Length: 236
Image 1: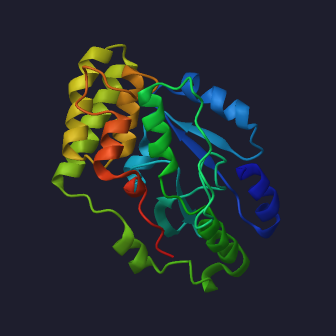
Image 2: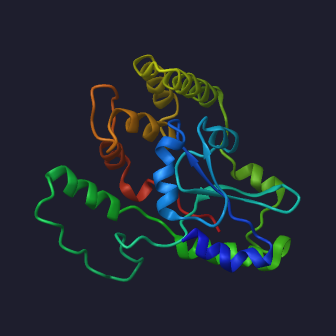
Image 3: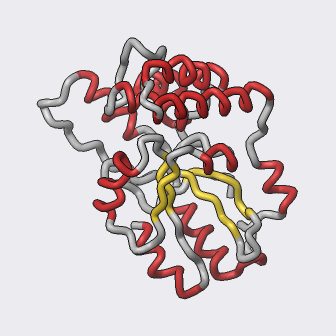
């Protein structure tokens, strides 16, 4: 879907770049990129540098950078369309009947995912307005507002980033068991960082289910906060 949007917006001066955040690198990201067949630059951030520098804590997140290289919107949920498995907002459409072959956990996962709140229509409206009007767009934020909306970095968040970096290093060096305590530390120090959680959970179980290595898993942690709070609402 991003490539369709790029076709629309690129003649107006906007370049779309997607970045996969995955410590496993090309081996993990390539199948997804090839399946999407993008016509825009599709990069792989194996060291999670982008999320560390910009404060990304979940995906998909989008940032807006103007022609001068200045950030005009900090990270926020960025969906290019509404997935078919999610009901449309305020449409009143009924949920389709789940396959009878699903296990209880799979049913719970399906229900949690369908309750996740995303706002692609609002996001794309704002993005198109910015492309059309540039700095005059009400969605292009002043530098002080970008700073105000950016996530703070208190000592525990900085320590979480260092712990996650150590975990990644050990994993890439071939010591996955030694990486686990550092990933656990990152989860404890910054529990709202889903990027940290999902990366470690994926190494333990590709479906991010319960394991003996970590205290949480995707479904348990999402149900604890409520699926509707998995992404923050857009502040447009």
